[in-house]
Amino acid sequence: MRSTGDNCAVFAIVKDTDCAEDIYRGLDFLQHRGQQFCGIATYDEKRIYLITHYGQVGNTFTSHELETFKGNMGIGHVSLKERQPMMWQGAVGEIAVAFSGNIINSEALLTEMKDRGEAFYHGLDIEIISKLILQEKNVVTGISMLAEKIKGSYSLVVLTEQGIYAARDVYGFRPLVLGEGSGAYLVSSESRAIQNTGINRFRDVRPGEVVFITRKGVETKKQLKSPRRAHCAFEWAYTASMDSKIDGLYVQEARNNLGKCLAERDIEEGGLQADLVAPVPMSGIGHALGYHMKSGLPYQEVFLYNRYADRSYTQLTQEDRDRMAKKKLSVLRYALRDKRIVLCDDSIVRGTQIREKVRELKNAGAKEVHVRIACPPLMYPCDFGISTRTYKELLAREYLANGNITTLDELKALETWVSEKIGADSVRYNSLEAFVGALKISKEHLCLKCWDGILPLT
Ligand code: SF4
Image 1 (cartoon, rainbow, N blue to C red):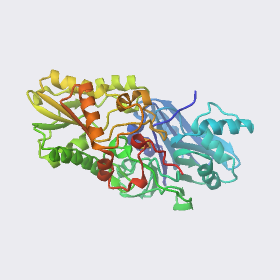
Image 2 (cartoon, rainbow, N blue to C red):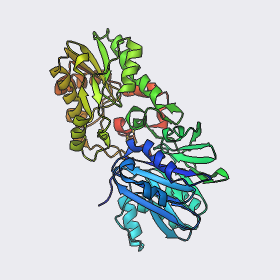
Image 3 (tube, rainbow, N blue to C red):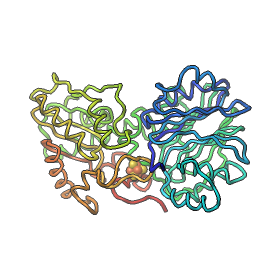
Image 4 (cartoon, helix red, strand yellow):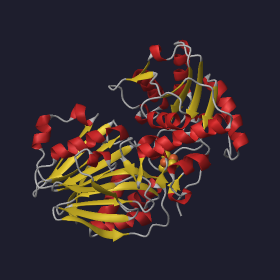
């Protein structure tokens, strides 16, 4: 079966001593980006060792396995949909490859490559990427060719006998960060996996940059021309962990700003009479804190998060996500009897989860529940690696079959409809304009396709 998209993360390290434990810990810090599969590959001057598992890093890799990994450089991957890294033999020697992202034109590439005589195991995106790289005489040329062939997103790590290559597509859709310190050089999909090793020197890999990492350091091997940046705006609102910094912007700061914007709108519209502001944990926390800062309303937890439940958004189907959402939150009844609650969350996909949360709060005695959503209404599926929705799953599409919400009046009409659908006393989303303003990144440097439907590819 072909993958149709992937939530995932990569990690890589070069250091003076064995590195398997470091990769294991790094992947553990990236686990929120995909829990279905995980894998590690290391190189010990003779050969590449590779193990992949079905499940989470902490539940699958044994201490015995970690001891069998040899070598002071290696890469790792966590994923929702496919096993990575993959290992290959080619003219460039033995390599292992892992990536985060999604190839939009994979079907066309597969047909073209099969017609040329290439064979595939499953036709996964990682196979296409690896084979495109291996077609060239050296890895840098191979990676550079991806920009010409691939329509889509990729943050990539390639383990070779000489060192590790890391690269980001020319738009910079998915994050990729380089770190350095304590005799180690690291690459990670999010800075948290670097910061939490105690290393504070890190920078984003630039869109189109190809770097080579050895024990001597990091060298930029190529800087491909970037037609424009298109950083995924959803990273700051939901996907990334709140302790990460992506393309110069702290995720926590972004979420606080988005919450403040929601409060500003309530203030502008005459002020909302409420007793407390609360998050839908975990991704609603930063938004609720921002709302609290701007409005002055007391911040209060009304749900207890079950830390042993998987993250709902990285389940494969919406049904799985709904089931998981029920498992992961329980109502804190003491806090909410007769209270008017402002409930903050990152986004509404189908509306089933937020409707359930509103119902639970009201059943437990809440007097009113006013839902505040950091993202504008989701109108389009993602083509670039967030494989979690289709048109028919989007609640806003049930309201508006075609076109976009462009004016505040249209947004207000949708909000009234959604509040009835989910049983809330009111609903407010950030408008697209407010959303972009809160991120403080130029609209031209963001992918906003979830909301405006524009594929930011030239
Ligand atoms: S379509 Fe949405 S989720 Fe996908 S990359 Fe663009 S902003 Fe991110």
